[in-house]
Length: 120
Image (cartoon, rainbow, N blue to C red; front, side, top):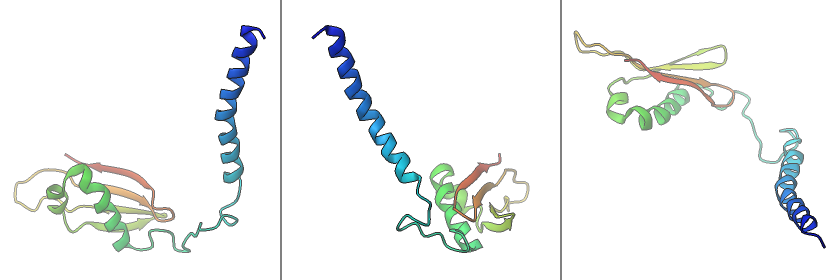
């Protein structure tokens, strides 16, 4: 057996270990959500109301901006616009204070955080 044959055989085996799982994954993800068990999607989406939207916003804001900062902007308010929850903190309440507020946009349907920021 030539050295080139051994190298080609080894390459083919490595390729099989990479391609086979990808092919299996493509097969599994080719199924519709309806065909997969345990793929329930609530009719009102995963974020059905403002209370849920605010809880999710707090959960993603606090690790990034800190509990003290986010708690100083409570209560957070949420409004629904075109299937997206817009959550904002309240502005500085101290007279003469300047600064922005936390903003989070969350998909009502699947709870994806579409945007998160904090003004300066």
